[in-house]
Image 1 (tube, rainbow, N blue to C red):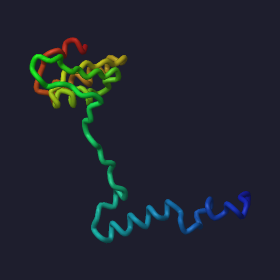
Image 2 (cartoon, rainbow, N blue to C red; image 1 turned 120 degrees about the horizontal axis):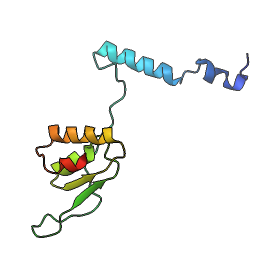
Image 3 (tube, rainbow, N blue to C red; image 1 turned 180 degrees about the vertical axis):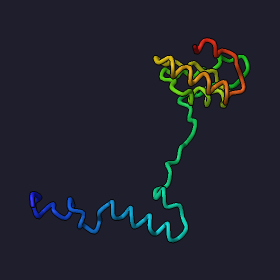
Image 4 (cartoon, one colour; image 1 turned 135 degrees about the horizontal axis):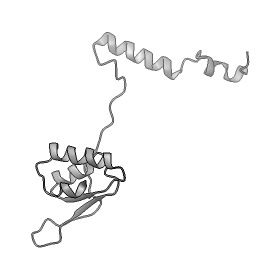
Length: 118
């Protein structure tokens, strides 16, 4: 064998702690108990919108504006809208800006200012 005796078990898959073997055992156990066996690991928990600064919601105070210099699909802009904030999104790729504008038109409840996005 090309592998030394020290690493033979790890690379040959004979080690009892093999991660592939543990995943298969977990999937079989979930399948037999009727649980979701296609996704043996829990999905990551998202914490949602977390402001990075404090903004005043008092009338007459300066409005807070969220700037997303990498707007992509517009998720940050939608979250800003859902939290009552104005937002500005920038993306170098025109197709990304078009995707974001389309998503905002569809999911957001407004039209104002989207012309500037294009």
